[in-house]
Length: 474
Image (cartoon, rainbow, N blue to C red):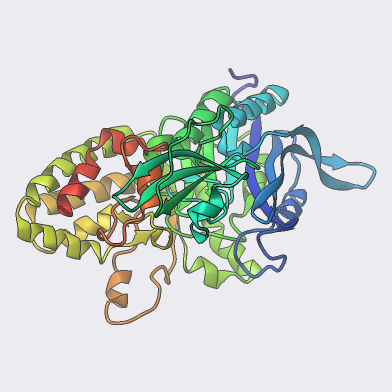
């Protein structure tokens, strides 16, 4: 429901922040030397923003104090940027406190706060900014105590319950273990079998992450129009085909990195000023996306972070045509490449070409390869369907890109293939594709890839991509 004349729109700009503090201090250093931003640094930036009549700025900060890897305190604070006439300074005035554990991983709780904010401050234009770690398939993953450092006998004391056991073979089982103190599920491979227990009624067996699909639900149900004009993700690895499909119905423009990103992030001042100084102009998500990309270089240069920007690939893309332009192609291409690799030699060829693609999230086992890169590589072998597929996907996704910033040092190191790889930069078309059976990350597969995984990515439910992957490595 709109409450303002479209000629004079009102904006709500909402920061959704996850701040995990280790022993009371930020996980990031206080020095401005790159890396994850300290919450204090972010607050300092926000307090320096100009306040305009045509916009409201809110923060939703889930602050978790970790002591010995246990959440000693887990509170969420909702604040609004306002001017304090007494101090003659801006302040983030706290307007709501929530004591909900794992708030930033619970989309129903998030959507309620979105709705509460949007009822408190009526608007018809919206920007959402997410801030903390990204994992390609979701955001805000918490640190978890490493159960694999302990023997199963030590875990099964008064502090832990075994929720269930899945036998891998005669000597090894996979356990779901709950820490009673924090209600946290831990996955653990052990070598001793224990009798399966009933799952406690109060057990929280959810994975501690806000998946792309759940973020989409929070936006759809928490904003008046069921969508936001722009989503700025300061979370690593989030510009990919999985994210785009999950969010295409509720986000007009997505600004996110295909790979890493860290402090200083985006120039929020430029966006706030663009909206505030042009109250008679119909600003939209595309203009927001263009502004973010255009200001990256001068912003990083002014702060002395040009070297960091050279390692980032950041895109601003429109999502409204994803289902029409990209989804049918992915279904078609998956069928065609499955036919192609029925020939044993073709399997080897595809595996080889995969190694020269831009990879997202390799360090963590997410293994998203750039699909356009793969098709371009395959095209060099004069494979007709690959040539046609590359031409289509390259043109289709480019038509969705508003602007992009591709650094000159996106590939680590150097060597004989380094210069050649620079000629195939990332295109934003990341899709899950692990390199081999040996390096597959079992946690990623269990959490996101299997059909019955708790957070199975929506794209893999409608495109038979995993059938192709399984066939390739069979």
